[in-house]
Length: 382
Image (cartoon, helix red, strand yellow):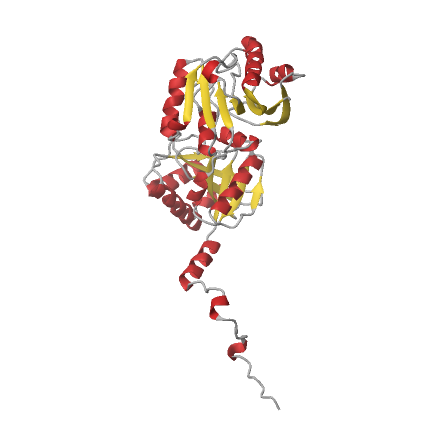
């Protein structure tokens, strides 16, 4: 009778594979670190300009994959993305399409006065202390309905004092108090002294300059391709071209403007962003066809012409837009793209209706500084 083999101890099956074929066991320290990362999630909210949430959500997922984090579950609104980030909130500061990041605390209390209770107050003070230790805030600004009420003034003082700040109307530690959708109240604190959309490289401003987060989002929309030859007529302070340089490689990155002061401003910003050596800038009229050495044919052109308020004049914009589109067509490669951002929506519709050189591939409306510009993705007709 064949001898019966005893079952392995502890009810586990023995692994009879050769040692080289067995999966390598993770060190205990690695397993503990992975478990700790999985358990540590930070409730945050990403503020996004209305009309750009889908692009910001795509960038967020890319960041999670690049950081080897699990793709977070999100709750998406018109102007915000809420999530529990499985890591330090500072990792989210790499996002270029969001306005700012806020740390979120939720409390199941009936009214804001309860936030002055011992447990809620200690939670908020500890969280704000961590933020203040990581960034040079100069004052605390409380934003809430009834912010001038006695309760809100007491709350602002109770949050500011332990971290050595003063409640100020111009404080850069922005703390918001609002009613939660599911009941109770939420407190949100911006994690950086200024919005992420206010780039550190912007050392020079021009009137009517485009929001950098908007520019970054729209560039993702029309595509960032390493082979693209890119041109930015009517360069201004250089926001669109600099954001394109920071987004990835390109075959060339050219920009020009008729205003010498605008060129000087763009050069300063490009140097602060560390991309000056990659850009070719010169003085020229955006409504003139290319000539001589500047006869490159571009795969992508970026245009943010005057909207007729801070810069430009409504009466002159019809001729300006007509000339800009004609000159852009002369500079375009056979399958060239043109990103046009304008608040002169009706004028753009009129000029583009039946245009011989350009047709609209896609359009989206966004919000920026009280305006609702149209963002037009145009393609060169054959």
